[in-house]
Image 1 (cartoon, rainbow, N blue to C red):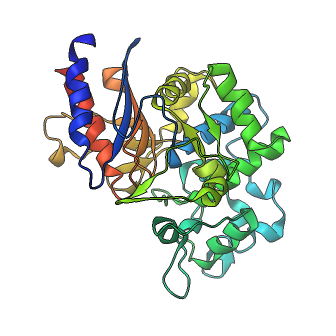
Image 2 (image 1 turned 45 degrees about the vertical axis):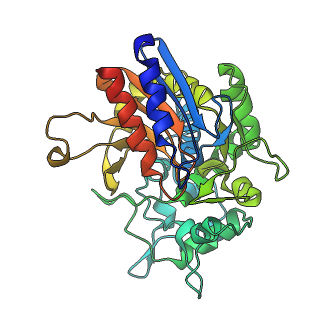
Length: 347
């Protein structure tokens, strides 16, 4: 890959516009060959919030428990939570289906649970809008569960062909993982993922006074929202670097956390938002044929986040891409940049 390094760096440099994109950090790996680059206000070693790409880490911990026989995809969440906590979480036609929700439903976003992050108050303000405005706040599991119940459930859990992306699903998964291990999630991330893989800059954000990660942008505003970043936890609270994220991604698809033959059960795809599909614990970015007539953009499997962070494996190219544009207002820029990098490597 050495002969295209300058061209790859040029792509990152050209992405900086001083209006929305102020810094980028990306890593590309093909086989055992790796390239890393950064631009703007980023150095390649700078840690950043990976937002919902965190869900891949939660999936790794969940499938690790399944591989050990300590958890099953068919297990009901009613086995783990106080009935009061999940009561009326998914009510359809007057019937509460919450006790029927399974681990697989949470991983695949097929639970029908509404997303706590999208619930609006009387003034039309939801937590996502509040965060984008720079309003910092904290929440815990009981609070976000009550907010999830305020929105209408989307469908009966496990309805064929139905999926709805909900951060609530992974909040519940994170708590289940903690209960089984009887250890906090930040310790599990450290001892089961970061330390074994030698990830020195990857951790769950737990300290509101921690100023290590780069602040995310919303348009031209830097966001100082440490309370919210602590609260995201298993659905979006991990800090990492492009190189650390690459080491994790390669390990994830190499079967380091669970047998590689489990990937077949993970690839049960349902549409969530264009052009993204949800599998069981991961996502697939796949353009339809009419937008990709010559297959220039192959399918990518992994996860991305609202911050513009992403981590994807491109099976047909044996290629991995991780990185961020660190911009909540334009997370699609990360995909455009990732595709440009991929196509440059393939020339």
